[in-house]
Length: 78
Image (cartoon, rainbow, N blue to C red; front, side):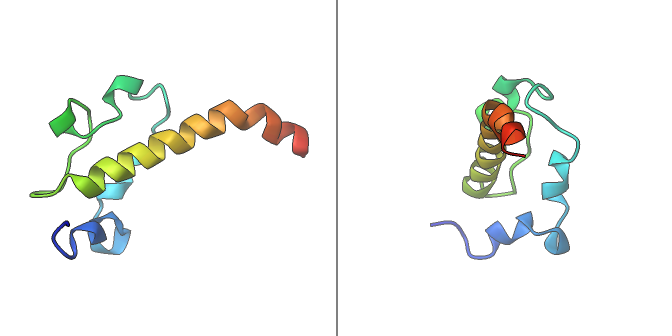
């Protein structure tokens, strides 16, 4: 139900918002800050939109949590 085109802002060729995650990790920022600012977190949302940024921040955080939880298993497979 978001305005058409707002989700496009996660594409580098359409904006640099996604680059704000470069160099970050589970502890940087602290876990409680892995949210959009509107929800008390560190990350900006787009003007007039929070659904896409919330989803992206959550997906990146959950991906890093999954990797951390399974890193030992992934190392064993090699």
